[in-house]
Image: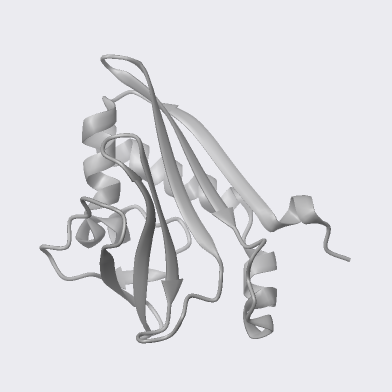
Length: 149
């Protein structure tokens, strides 16, 4: 049985880089496949750098599928979250979120969350339930390698 606490998966790490540098790697979809710990993202066209709530960026998945990602939370340099969906469809309700908390000028606590508590498409439940904090941590760790280089 799935309990409400299993609907939200989180990973966190302090990265030795400033929040602006880290956020630029997250908010530019064309860079996301370089650090995706789920190995689910293949590519995204350049020029889609997210700047506000309401924007939609397009991503191609490793299986060839296309996702529209609607930005629903955004604070430059601090917070970005989106709801993915098939092109032209209403998002089924799972959310990807990145939160950045500067510690000082050279380090930032990064929290990555996958929240499927509002997922309505039962066909996606098994995949959502299989998404673990280890996969999210892999994304955070790969992001750290890029940000710290």
